[in-house]
Length: 85
Image 1 (cartoon, rainbow, N blue to C red):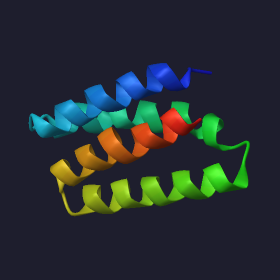
Image 2 (tube, one colour):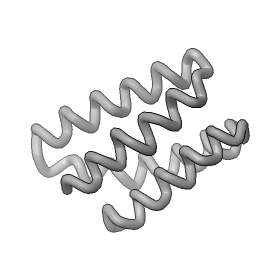
Image 3 (tube, rainbow, N blue to C red):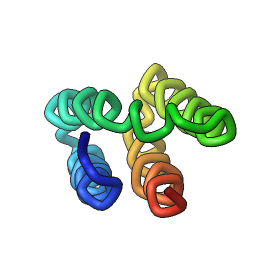
């Protein structure tokens, strides 16, 4: 299992890729990031609910191809959850 600190770095790098318009590369990295983050939020119902909210918002932005929105959710909200862990 990856540490929250390493996932914070990955989330920031992924957000930067979305901001640079490299959405395909960023989306592939985001899949790995999400897979690695799931176990971190599984131990508490409250954390899991917060994670589900952030993930849902990210996926809604992705559906709309709102890459800046995806980047914002990754860089600020997901990072905030990981820091709180």
